[in-house]
Image 1 (tube, one colour):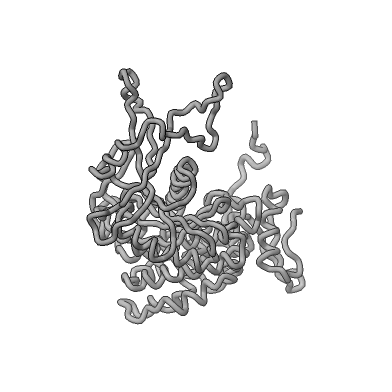
Image 2 (tube, helix red, strand yellow):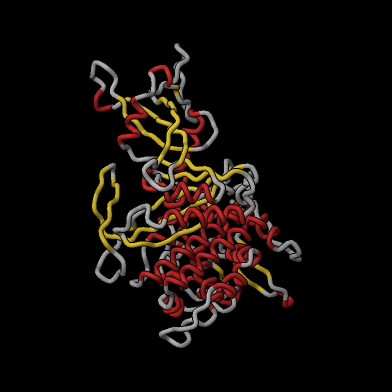
Length: 467
């Protein structure tokens, strides 16, 4: 077991060193943000002209950059942004603001300012894609996923908080909270990045505003270099004529779960018994004796006209996945549960089903945000929380881009990136007036940190190296 040295068992902690830096990895990470044009985008798009406090709207580029840097260092509330002023951090980063100042700045945001910041998010993602290895293979195929979640809040001070439906342990429950709607972009080999995030009241329907979000996400993907095919995926809340029409106008394909209706049930009933094909999912197990898949999942397809009664009917493929109902295994005949979705994807039905079910990758983004800046809604004002979430999305994309540069952490979680390449202890010094950052010896991820540093500062006289 690891035992504490007797020499240091009674040591007295003293917080007095002004030359120590807790998050030296913020230096190359924030330099990468500037390389992708973060400050220029904020200065050109975010305009706060009327404020309740005269100085609150001054220098939005510096204040938003400070919030994003604090999030990259692990801040999940406004008070945690104080980490940027600890030790030697104020010497490394100029113009660091107090958390109270940043909180007042966020409270000056309105809905319009939130839209401006959303434009910064999309422009910065395109900039990151141009100076890192984000979204490899986007020139061949990219996926746009859309989904919402309900974040619980407590107390009576949260604007927009209301009761909405959430699924916990497989059961639908009513929960008081706020509901962010998120769109992501990913590729076959690239981890998802956030193209848009919009905060809504807890009682808002999951599909509210989805068509516009999809249109913006497709445009963002094109701006980021996705010149190939784009496939939009979503669950039943987004399987409607508005979202399908938005995909068609933007020149993207769609793969969306459709709600069971009389027309859908009739189409499923028309599928013959010999039309079903077993699906070999990644990691599927094959019976060594028979050679058959140990799975009862099967798919079939029929041509289908979706939304025939609306102004925008869509000719598509109705692909149906069926599995045995585990609650009725003792029945004389198999009882199946059907899961239909519509798509104009040209892949064979089994592969199209596998591609559609990969939509679940957006849940990893939800997990990253909840395990980071979206752990709480830090303000009582709705627009301030909306701006906070957009900053969280910019931070997510920034860390993801930094991870791709290190190569070893290209698909790592946000918490892993913060722990390995951001939260690097260091000591700052100026021997002979030359600034030097002394990093911790034998740091397990020293090679990854060095790659990031050398990529962002290619002309540095002496990049950090493993001791």
